[in-house]
Length: 289
Image (cartoon, rainbow, N blue to C red; front, top):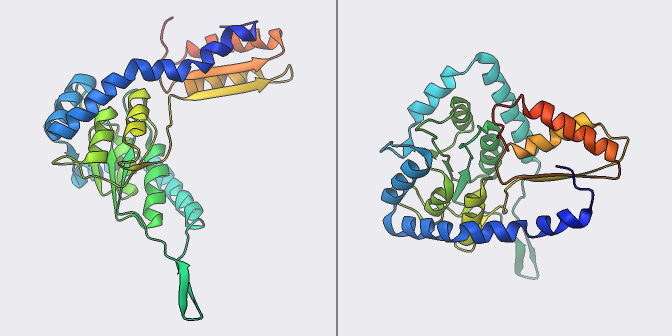
C-alpha cells in the first residue's frame, strides 16, 4: 500500500507496539502463571493447543539430534560446520579476561565468571532458523557457559532436521520441543523437565517478546526482539527490486511484522509495489489480503 500523506501513516506506526501489547498481554500473563503453577502439564497443554504437538516427551534426545544430522546432505553439513567455525573465530576475539594487581597490600582487579545456564529460544512455527541456533548457542559456548538449554516449537509434532542438526554441531546440552510464551516461562521459572536458567536469548513472535519482557528481572534477557521491523529510506536512484526483496525478507517472519519504505519519488514507490506483488506471488508463505 502506498501512502502519499506521511501524517496518515505516522500515527499508525507510533501506536503499533501499544496496541499489540494491549491485545496480547492478558494471554501471555495467563500462560506464564499457568506454567509457574502446573509446570510440564501446562507446557504439554499449550503445545497441543498452539502447535498441534501431542508428544508426551518434552526433551529431544542426543540420539535424535545425531539422527537428524545424519539425514541432511553432505554439502549442508559442510556449510553448517563452516558457519560454526566462523562464528567461533569471531566471538573468541570478544572474550574478556580476569586480571588482578596488588597495590599497597590491596588486591584490585576484575573477575570474569560465565553464567551457569542460558536458555536459547529458536522460532519454528512458520519457518526454520538453523542460523538462530548457531548464532546464539556458539557464542555462549565460547564464553564458557556451563549449560545451554534450547527450546523450539514442534509444529504438528515435527522440528526441521536442519535446526536439529545445528543443535547437534553446536553442542547444545538440552533441547526441548516447546515454544511460545510457555517456553519462556519454563526457562524463567523452571519445570519438572526444563531447568531454570540465568539468561534467555533469541527472537520470537509477539507472545515470546512479551513473555521475555515480563520475566526480565527474574532472569536476564538479550532484548525485546520482534515483531520484525524494517524502515528503508530511498530516493529515485534506488533499485526497487532490491527494496522489495528487503521488505519481504522481514515481512515473512510474522503476520505482525512491519515493512516500510519512505521515498520522495512516487515513481519509485509504484515500482517497489510492482516488485512486491511479483515476488509475493512466488512465495509459499504469502497471505491473501
